[in-house]
Length: 378
Image (cartoon, rainbow, N blue to C red):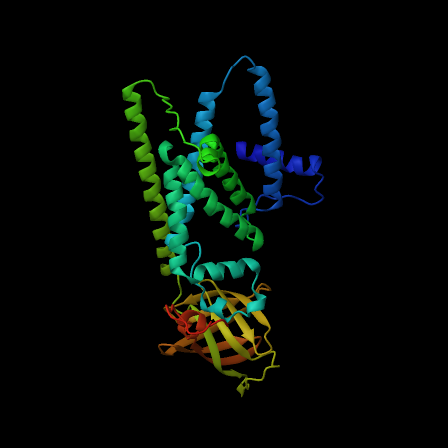
């Protein structure tokens, strides 16, 4: 109910206050930079300023907000820490940036989007993912403790600044969220701003951070530490489990035919079609994913289909956006070759397809070399 009310206020703000001429919709689709998200940020900022003014007037006699500031800092620290550790695990387990698949390796370089280019670059190297994930995770972990929060915030600022630049420079739709994380890390540094400047800029002695005791009794301090330990342990365990489960589900759901194939033989209505580059009928290549397939023809036109395979009866179904369905049966003739028989646009079809080895590409078989007698830049 509160979610619906908040959405209604965001819609109203976009329509009445910002005069956005088109309909705003809150649809989770992987993008954090939708019109809804920008209007939502604007609404939250205005609401925060208004609330601050009202609160200051209503509670004008209060001399300080030290306790409230402490808890705001704790909430920001924990939110930033958990976000960094979650992204760190996603990189360590390669669930955020998977290795480029055969379909990506076969894609013409110039037809990739800036985001696709970034994902290919970042997904290529396991070691670089571990490197990124380690520093995101260690920065988040250090933020969870008062003694190391400044060090953690410095690491977080460095890491998140790089993320923000990637998102802005490669058009990754997480610009708002990553910028928010960067502002959080700077907010935490600002809490120790004087000590930070004395150490890094003014070359002055740095006094220890002031010790703040929120709980007045030993019993409550012990309870606080116990709850904190349980909370952090539960989060770490759940994050690790989610990433392992995501990887496991990806492997389980993968169809045995998944991969990219060259079409070696293509017979349509008993007529063997030669591999002529201008042919708009003959298939050049077929790429099969978990639930989709794409067919690239000889003239480089591409058709996309929803894909469903019945591994028991050796049949497959490919449905286009226009609800046109191709029904075929298939047989595996060897470890890398299939034959496909069925109907295609009212014609009979027989094709022989051979799997493309993902290690046959220079990008995947070049590897690492300590010694390079000349730059290998292609």
